[in-house]
Amino acid sequence: MIEVRFHGRGGQGAVTAVRILASALYLEGKYTQAIPMYGTERRGAPVVAFLRIGESRINERDLVHNPDIVVVLDPLLSRTVPVTDGLKEGGLIVMNFPKPGNEAGIGGRFRLATVDATGIALEALGRPITNTAMLGAFAKASGLVSLESLEKTLLEQWPGRLGEMNLRALRTAYERVTPPVDVSGIQALGKRPQEEIFSRDVSSWRIFKPQLDEGRCVGCRRCYIYCPEVAISMTQGKARVDYSSCKGCGICGEECPTGAISMIQEVL
Image (cartoon, rainbow, N blue to C red; front, side, top):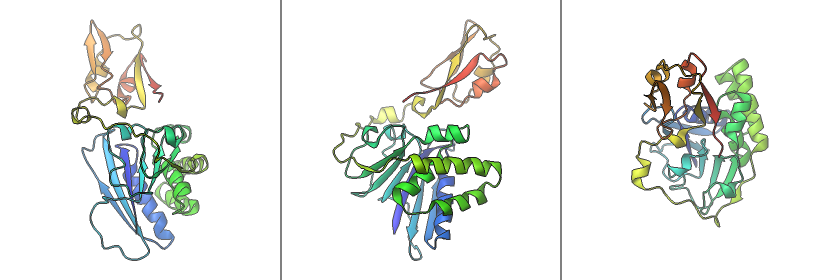
């Protein structure tokens, strides 16, 4: 039996990815078990989901504690979530990261394949929803599922134009994922102190950040009212953004009637 753990953020489609992957493997005659695990149900918050793959009926019902493979849908998630905890020696990590595996800040006795799933998702979907890109990377890096089975399942999930867009993300990531590299000689980034992990700082959740043009801000307070993270305050009739509390959802930019707020992509 092979056990897989998916780490992502709310809105990236980790749970959907596990369901699609389980269905694709079922088409290939495998027994599968997909387990979603919901936390705060808050966009951007860490999410985890599990998958078991077997050649015979699976009776295990517990969560996956010692995975053979870990899939990480967000490039900054490993800075706050211990994504490698319990990963078996020699295991595989497939990670959304725009640089080679030896620069991802993850080290240990396992292998690491990377793909710029955020960039691919923005190209194919226009949104940083990285799940289908990561499935393409998973297929290539692990060799456990064929691209054809994933394509068939994906089109059943999203027929029509949306399905074609996700197919593009899947195929592009399949081509672009790097071969797994041994990271046993890499010094992993240190774990953050508990007080930082549970702090209110959500800046690492962000793909885009709001940029304010003060000259166009008329002080209408719409961004202040609609911001779900209370990251915007008003000072002398102008909006001010507290970037440590901003998760980059973009609602402020959508609601601004004068176009004073634009969303700028963060650079790793």
